[in-house]
Each structure stands twice: as structure tokens, then as C-alpha cells.
Length: 421
Image 1: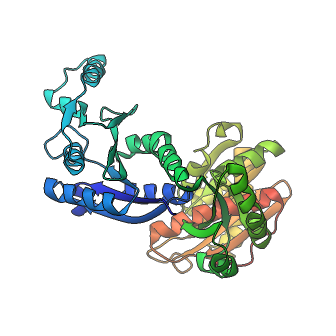
Image 2: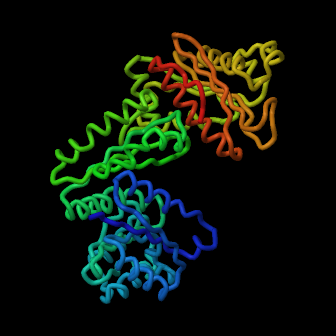
């Protein structure tokens, strides 16, 4: 029996396109990584009757329903009231939470608006979920055979509440159906989603427990293996031979598993070798450095970055030879290699990664989407020219991911991929 989860985003601003519904994609990704069945997402405006109807319909067809948004203190925040109506219960006020709200405002030297008392209301029988990032608690409520969860719409509040309270509860609920569910996510780069799908077509159609699924994100492909069994050990035993097959077929394309990120992998490779790192970026404008410095403790390995958009900066700060530019053009492997080697010298680092290219929309030296990545290590310097589809931001995003992986392969002593799919 498959445990099913449904997601409802609440807010007229989402329907009008005034706010991009990033919560839907984030929650969808988290549910997919956990191997939970996620079959439907809905956006409902701030209309009480329609929201009540949608909650009841979702509860009738799914085991769990997640609602985001509508937990604020204003008149159009109606999620609490709609949950109570859908469950056929009343709202009650939590006096203890009222005290917490007043203390929160007093600690900031401000008087609490009385409208904030609304955030202490909750449906009878519901459990309040702690919100350390804000004043609106989340909610958990059993209703008509399903479990309803309400979380804030603000991502900074939603993310920790979902990961720390909602997702563990969903895992427990799902495991209670048939035992336990275990997922393993293998992270890869260097092949397209369609190509990976072809490589594992036999497994996809022949394996029912564990199951296999493919998830694409910014050039990286996740292969998720999910097994159901009576115990964790039995589920892991089911996954093990399938994981071995996936690893054998993908080889060095796999860079991590589960919560690993490429930035973390690079950090640990550099730490193991005792090497320092810097970047020289033209078209990406610091995006690679931003990714690398997102890792706590990155100052152990990362020294700095040179953003070199103009030719005189490439020549003056990075030592790129004007003759190289004249002969090969700014968007060339020769220039990328000199940028990487020059960054290593200027920044005083062992390893440097560089990017030059034509991100678009207008072509620069080469057709839009033509990007070149250079990598310098103590063992040598190399570069690859790649071509990416899409608009400027997509090209820059995919180039940033590709640069990190070319860096990772160089640190591992692996050959650079001969093609980009």
C-alpha cells in the first residue's frame, strides 16, 4: 500500500503571479527524496469556501495533506479557520501561546497588535508545531482519515519546520502502513535525464521493490531507490544490489549520495589534499564562488575570487596574454586556461577554476550559450568548451554546476567527460 501526500498552497498572490510558488517545488523535491508518494499539488486563493472544499477533497483521496500559507494575523489568513471547518471542529485559543506571543513582541521593545492573537487560535484536537523563526505556529490535525499539516508560507519559516517536524511525522505515518520505507538517493552529473532513463530502463520496468526514479535539477540527476520492508535492515538489503548496479553503470558520474552536495564534496577533497582554492569568473560573475562559500568552514580552503568581465582585467589581474586573446578570442579554451593559471598565481592558491563565455542573449565572440571552463591544479591545467541551451540565467546556472563538477573530476584525477548531453 502506497502512502500518498498532497500539497495545497494557499494565497491569492500565488494565483496572480505576484509571488512565485517556490514552496511547491521545494516540498515536492523533499517528498521525492524521501520516497513518499506525492500525486497532486493545488493552489487556492484566499477564499474560505473554496479552501474548505479543497481540504475535504484532498483528505478524502490522500493519507496526508500539507498546506502552506494563510497562517498570518491578517483577515485574509484563513488556513486555521478552513482546517477547522473541514474537520468539523471549532477553533480554540491557546492562552499559553498568547503569553509567548506577547513575550516575543516585548523582547523586541514593541507592543503587539491585538490582531496577532489570531495566531494563538487552533482547531480543537490539533497539535501546534513550534516555529523558531516566526510567530505563526504550524498545525497538525487528524481529519476524515487523513492527517493535515499547516506550515507558514514564508520559506525561511517553512523549511526548518517541514524538515524537523513534518517530514519525520510523514515518514513515521508512511512506515506504519507496511513497516518501514527507506530511500537512497545517488547524485550524478554528466549525462542527461533521458540518457540515464535509457541506461536504467530495464531496472525501471522490472523492479517493483525497490523502485527507481529519476530527478533532474540544474544539470544534476538524482537516482532515487526506495524500498519497503518490515525493518530498516531488510529495506537496506533490498536496495544494496540495485545501488551497486547503478554505481557500476554510472561510474565517476556519481559524486555523492543522499544529502551530499557538490560543494561539500569539493570541500572535503581539498581538505584531504591540503590544497587551497580560488576562482576567476567572467560570465558567471561570482556564482561559482557563491556556491563554494555556502559550505560552513569553507575558509579552510577557499581564499578568494577575481570577477574579470573586461579584457583589461583579464590581462592585468590574471595575466592573460593579449596575444592569446587576439589569436583565439576571449571565449576560448586557451583564455580559460590562462585565467585559471593566473588566478592561482594572483590569489596564491593551489587550485583555481575559471569561466569565460557568451551567456547571451547577444553573442560575444562565440554564439550565445558557448561557455568555457578552465581548471588549474598542481598537476596541470585543462579547459573544456561547452554549449548550453536556454536563456541567460539558465546558461549561467548550468555553467556554474558544470564548473564545480569539472573541478571535482580534476581533484579526483578523473578524465574530463568527452561530451555534454
